[in-house]
Amino acid sequence: MDNQNQDLPENQEISIELTEDMAEGVYSNLAIITHSHTEFVLDFVRLMPGVPKAKVKSRVILTPEHAKQLLKALQENIQRFEGQNGAINSRDIPFPLNFGGAKGEA
Image (cartoon, rainbow, N blue to C red):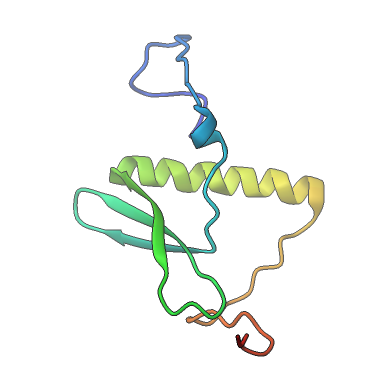
């Protein structure tokens, strides 16, 4: 999340391995966030046009502290992105998503 990990002694580096499969990533156009008193659950979903059922493609479970660190890291990265590329146009997207256009027929 951020360059400083509170659990590591100062100046200690960690090595992070990224496998080829993981490096490909998973596309998601919907995130569902739920929480209990001990954890946050982020489910990343891919919705496709004309398909009534969507599957969770990835699930990440975080402690509340790590969820807050993730929020901070996302905010910092969005600020940097917008500084380089201009404002991100965000809009409220109704659910379920409307992909626009006519429905496909076979």
